[in-house]
Length: 352
Image (cartoon, rainbow, N blue to C red; front, top):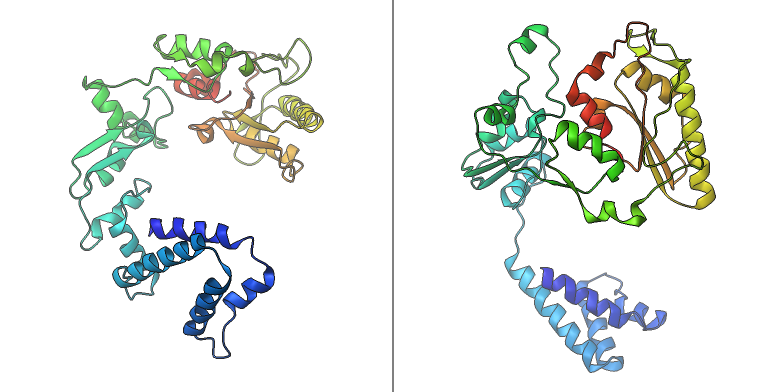
């Protein structure tokens, strides 16, 4: 089938220079719309007006299409579930979530799975990992993740105390099973990566050549305040609780973030440079307040995107520029969620 596709593309390139009238003659159907008439016009056209190369291409196309017609059979099914079952049974690779992999247990005549790859395995509860691990015929399983990023979310204090949120990845790691560390990072400017690498990765990760190159130096805005990373002290900001879910927010920080986004947008438009900005905060109240403040002002501009999410919502993602709104500002020095080093690690490692 792949060969037939290549041949048809090649044939199309040969036909392209022909006049519009010639092509109309070639593909004109008889009044009854019969296929035989189409091929008769095709044959006449080729014999009268085309090169030997085109004749050869035509012959090979027809040969491949005839072979497909004789040997390629599709099932006579029309309902959605039967079509899905047919596609999954004949697929070489299947991508799905851990929970939806349960549907693969009930496929009739399904081939055994040789290899199972679980991404973000450190975010998956042990019980959730068992769903794909019980698929028939799995011979090898690869768990990809990092136990010092955000674990699975457990809302019950009882479940949390019972370590219900622990992942299979973390359990195997604690039992001394060998791990293979991906020890080169390709995302962050060295100025950004230095602190996370020393604080969370025991200096076992190095910077790839691409982030060390001079072209990777970024100065998003003019002025001494902005470089590969910047700390902006919003000393007038005060934390407060939102009206709906009592989640914390900081209105002054909302205004500061909005102003920075506005400047980044103007810079992107003026320079014509595409820019992807992420705004991250540990509190849903702050995320909601920033989203409401920004509105839909930047949705229609193709060269500039801005995404506002919680730290949990940004795990696994990256953007050109990350603006982190910490929210907390109080007389006791409490930092709340940010005392969790996993959450801090994720927040500080999303930016390029």
